[in-house]
Length: 485
Image (tube, rainbow, N blue to C red; front, side, top):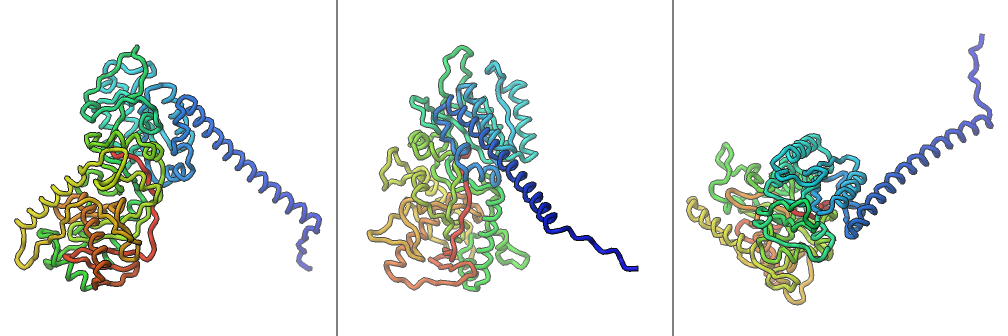
């Protein structure tokens, strides 16, 4: 008996099946598109509602800018503090944020009836703080904290939680982020002494809350990847005997040693003890010191900073610097990013430029020189590679080249990836300045610079164990512009 034959559908039947499948796929696609459009519409409606209460909120990039929304949704954990006076505005902003970011949570530091006599030491405050920490432990992408217009020192507990769980802080304050006129300003000490306003007081914008510094912040995964790339570059350099010989000669006395007594290069550079932690990286744009630095108010309320706060940027890493003191990534800022860069004493600006950062450099350099002098080991030389100056100005007619890619305004921009024994992070900027100066001198004098080829680029020695790495291909890294509180 012959086996039964499989009956194939006729051509019209097959066409019907294919058409049915096509229609089902099309229907599912339309449903998905309608759902996505609905979510976008709801988010836009919430943002519009917030904008009716605060016209400036329409420009909040974390609600309107697609690149920023995508970056916050996928690459960086953010704790957003709503530092606004109006309860309606605060509520609308909170709803707009949670509508935009599905993986989000919110809590309020005061009751719905307003601030109590001592809300920050009472049940409401501690309940909110517990909610914040619970959300941090769960790794919620966006945490919204509202009811912060009356700011005592207790709010620092919330910032500490953010730092502990690798959250980047973003303070939304209309008088600093949306250009509201007539805002009150005060120093950090005044903020700490501010008392609660009475319930029947007329609403007014809260005093601006200033960060320790402003800058571009990397998310956790991007920070880890960038740190890893920097370490890879360092290991590539260590494959070059000449690099090891020169670097070892100028190494900081007392640096970690391996079992055989040689330098332990795996532990030479460290981020331990840094105020910002050992993982999350940043590029500082302005050191405010909680408004104690002159020019802080003008910087915080400048149009460029107001519009950029809470916005995502792609910074360009063009190389690395490796010195006996620091390991850093070299940043080249574009025109938009340069608007956010602090001025130096040779530049003109709307606010008073001061050398606070330079004073810190001087103190660090003096401490380091003293340390080297006291702990110098036999056969080792003391490095004199400690220039004390502002950003290196560009010579007349200068044009960027392979081995002199930056100078002048913004050329100090960098990420600190590690420091040597007893060296503070601020030294990275000074080391970069010194390398830029030596680059310009080498070009002008047509010096013969020791140059070694790496897999990822080229490394050149500018004396006393100080090296600059020039990448064959620049690295783009995502960041969020905000402040460290």
